[in-house]
Amino acid sequence: MSWTRCGWTARISGGLVVLAASVVASPTLHAQQADGYARASSGTRELTLASGTSIKMLFDAANLGSAEIEVAEIVFPAGEISGAGHRHGAIEIFYVVEGVLGHIVNGVEFRLGPGMAGVVKPGDEVVHRVIGDQAVKALVLWVPGGEADRIAPADRWTPLGG
Image 1 (cartoon, rainbow, N blue to C red):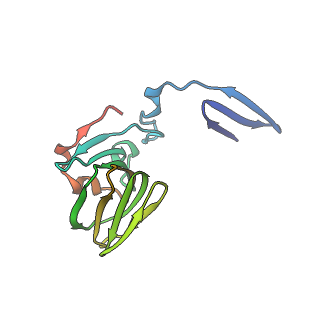
Image 2 (spheres, rainbow, N blue to C red):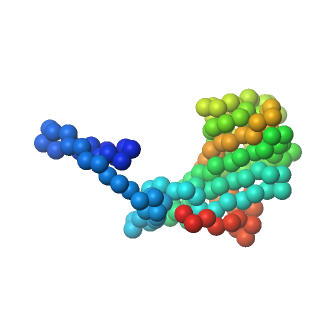
Image 3 (cartoon, one colour):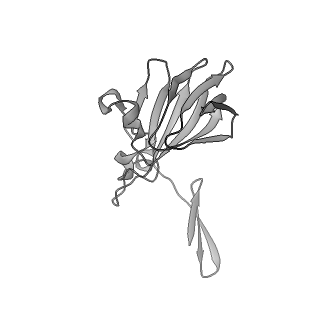
């Protein structure tokens, strides 16, 4: 059994814990592995909408080898109200990293601050609203994947190197 964290590897061998330092070159962190998916990623593609909202896809079919889930970093600028109400064909989960997000689901607003999460099920109507004068940075997960291409066609996305 072994674990890797912060460049150190701990391995249990015959009841002894063996520690070894490891150096990982960053280009290999996000490279797709021989079994078809990347273990880590700095992003596959990005999109900036006319409103200034930016979406950076961290994991999608391009580096997962399948479309089970998409994971993105999204930044809503201060004052942003995302859509007059939209629906997704997938579960959408937001995890707020910075700022305060008005997470309006089916007309009911929930206030999400850093460390809080919100969910929208397929068919629910959702509006994302920045509360206050600070941009909101959040992680968004779509299960199953494919929502990014519903937001904008593939030719509007800018490919990233990793």
